[in-house]
Amino acid sequence: MFAIYKREMRSYFTGVIGYVFLVLFLAVGGAVFCMTTLFSMSASVSDFYFYMMLFSAIMLPLLTMKSFSDERKAKTEQLLLTAPVSITGMVFGKFLAALTMFAGALTVNSLYFIILYNYAQVKTAILLGNFIALLLVGTTFISIGVFVSSLTENQLTAAVGTMAIILVFLVIGIVNTLLPASYWLRYVFDCFSIFTRFQTFTNGYFDLSSLIYYLSVSAVFVYLTIRVYDRRRYN
Image (cartoon, rainbow, N blue to C red; front, side, top):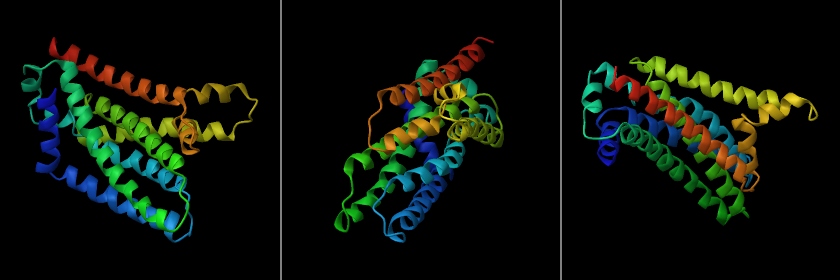
């Protein structure tokens, strides 16, 4: 698995994907930070992480679109399938590489808030809650992207397909906020809403059920990716 992880990390920086992702993510993060805190003279961190979550829904599919689709297009997929590494190790290596890129960029963006400690009372618990929430959401988005990438050799199709699935999860959350509190469908949507569970963390509360939800959704899509390649190896 570690060999696949190193190979994938190297590929981000031997091509343009890694540089484009980091430059755009950090640039947009800096602009959003200025708008939501410096220009508005506010010490609130929730708006920053909310907008970055929406931006991540666009950027992370672009980061994961090459995970497996590029292997199929370049005809190197068979080399991976016959390499002395398990299917699980191969999938986790690619998944963890994308997660490392995202976690690194998110950490750098979060360092902006060190500035606010000199001018306002920043609630560290809320800052950490937002950071953890976005990291968990990003983990979920990456797992979806890796799965969709395993289904096609076209990178654009992988990116668009991932965005479509993420959009469904986000729309469920938006619709959920518009439903009456007593309406039974709201409880159903709560079970699948990424947005609703994100808000719990942004208020500074550590919600175990939300943590389990994000990790479970990520595990499901990683498992589906493993099953795709299990079938492909023996067909």
